[in-house]
Amino acid sequence: MQFAKRLDRLPPYLFVDINRRIAALRASGIDIVTFAIGDPDLPTPSHIIERICSEAHVPANHRYPETEGLPELHEAIADWYKRRFDVDLDPSTEVLPLIGSKEGIGHIALCFVEAGRLVLIPDPGYPVYSMSTMIAGGSPYFVPLTEERDFLPDLDEIPESAASKATMMWLNYPNNPTGAGAPLEFFEKAVQFARKHDIFVCHDAPYTEVYFDGKKPPSFLQASGAKDVGVEFHSLSKTYHMTGWRIGMVVGNKDAIRALFTVKSNLDSGIPQAIQLAAVEALRGSQAVVSEHNGILQRRRDRLLKVLAEIGLHARPPDGGFFIWAKVPEGYTSVDLTRELLEQVHVAVTPGIGYGARGENYIRFSITLADDRLEEGIKRLAGWRRGAQ
Image (cartoon, rainbow, N blue to C red; front, side, top):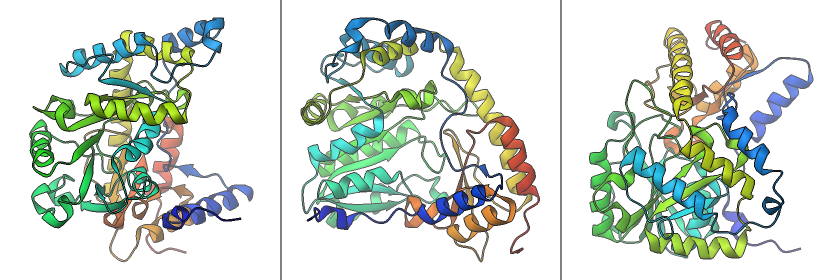
């Protein structure tokens, strides 16, 4: 049996050891409070579920869907972008539904990346950016995100030798894992950088509707000329707590949309139509649930930030998203601290090294766990003692 050499380029899964430890503790009867999973605990709103239940009884929705998605969904996405960001999109050429945004993020590298070419990737960042780059035959060039710069990349510091070989650049705001936001001025600068170096920009924006302290995030497509140089990936997963339904979208540059459709039409069979129509209901229906969810998440954020400060884990308050990015105390690696919290107080977190070399000094907490579990986790964290056995 001969496997493809591209598999040799993919690193081993960092969390295997930690997951084994969690499994072993649970098998021995120990309760684990996990802050490691960024999956909403609040349910999908009832009006969306009612629509999918209704559509599931329609025989036409049992057949193969078209890869490009229903025209009604294209129009709902374009209308939502107009209402939310005042961005005009042609529903037929500048919108493409996805089987969750992760699917499109993974596939778009096949449209732009070839052997010997670079992709500019934030460090720390969502691992799929680098994994899809390597699977497509390219090489990641990691661009540092530092707390001193509010986790925004310094585009001026990217050397010409890297920029000249790059075909794509990934941005992600509100950011996973740091929780940082980006102002529209930064996106304007990113457009100019992309024009100068002939680089295509992919902005991953699933958290624009999950924001705190009134800091409503902009869309990359609001920047002047953004559609000339890029696309934006979005998702219903975070906004409407529909992670399990697997539905998202990519919008923007029509040539890139067409290229991605070409890849997808050869590899997948589209989104089940009942789910597409539930997405239409989400996008066109009441948006009141979004602010309700954000109020719950902000309260959880503030509760967790308070205890982290008390136990000496510094964390910049996130502007949006599901995560708190906390600095590891001196004398620990991110994996060391993850193991100690797990073994000492039975709390699971995510080590920052899993998001890149620049994540080494941090651990990530998710705030998507039920309030009773959050309070139990906070109680346990408050009892943590550094270095205790």
